[in-house]
Image 1 (cartoon, rainbow, N blue to C red):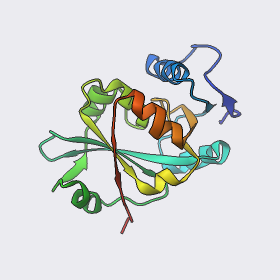
Image 2: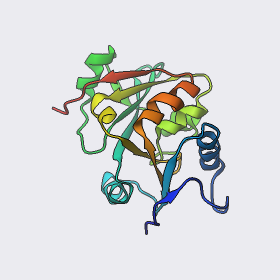
Image 3: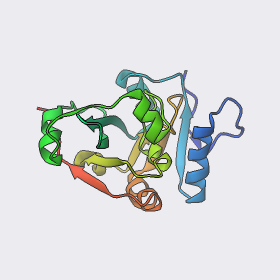
Image 4: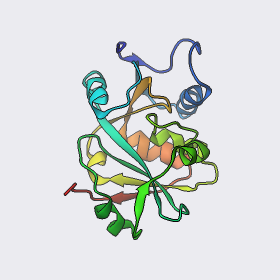
Length: 182
């Protein structure tokens, strides 16, 4: 089930996790316009494609990666329909062996559970342990779709706000990468 597209935060906190409410507080504090839909838990890109039809935004695939030693962590944002090859990214960022980081590290650094990974989780990384990597194709659309740190809602936020106001408020920089998926 997918609800209608609604401007801004939910009317009540009922059935909302604190991590989700913190996202709405953060976006409202920055006076950022965002659209929201609620839906059943979305664990697959196929489910996200259905949500994308309602949001009319570029759905973002988020991958939480680390080096072999688990000393470097990365949040990779890329278009949802693009294939990912670790070898292609490894060469660009100078990390010889990338793998998917574990659930415990995702919770520790971003306060997010698998299936809910989002750029907005960076607001929970006060020590700035996670580096942001963004595929250049993601920057081309007017709107980006992402979870508010839970996978039962999705947001539509202007790309310029995500990589402008929000990134600045987080005190973060992003590294743009070019992924072909071959």
